[in-house]
Image 1 (cartoon, one colour):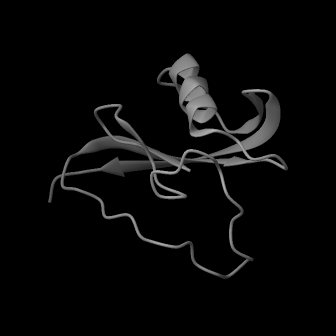
Image 2 (spheres, one colour):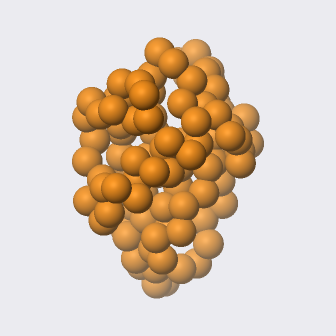
Length: 95
């Protein structure tokens, strides 16, 4: 999973700063670690890549660079493998 902040900075958040994807826990179980949102405002995204193969963080990052500002969910080729891309969009506002 990759988090994209309002400044378009990308960070691998699951597995935390990992170089390759990993299996997600069973339904109803939480992921290891947590993500704390900062107080910046604007549009941010959490993007999940689900595949039968382990994906490299580099391939996920390259996929996101190629998509630019319009990452869409759905089936996609990420590196050499097919994946289902899921996008959760957040709009953070000042309090």
